Image (cartoon, rainbow, N blue to C red):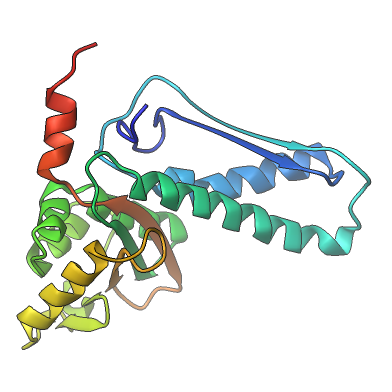
Length: 228
């Protein structure tokens, strides 16, 4: 099926991962859950969920020495994030990948919640598709996420361009920011086609990321021209 009805936590998604190392099943389960929370549960295409999703990870083989477990955990998380990014980039009608990173939060869970809310905002997604550096839509989505933020500490970057500092808009070259967005839409698949949005919300120690895509007329056409 197309990459639609994708949103945590039920996302019409099937993922199968195999590993040829023997590890403790309980450690493997905990490690997989942590990786899923930072990857598949941080991706959204259209804000709609479905009735089924599954991530299965198999591990069997010679016992892995304990000192190598952190490297395996890192590799598993990196693999899951790569797959999650591909799902978002393959979103129905998408022309670019959207990556939102929130820093300065009190907890990683709060940072991911805010990042997911921004990624799933229809107004943010349509602004990205229109190559419009509309910082107000991004901040509004962050504000309604339910995660706390300090309005006077907000700083926002769209790509390399800082558009907000200490909660106040900066004088920026809107045409240059628009070109950045246009270049991402013309970029090579999963190489330089990612619109990066960074939002600092305070002085907390935690950060988190989420991935999505833009919302185009093609998404509407795909989902308006078939019935089930």
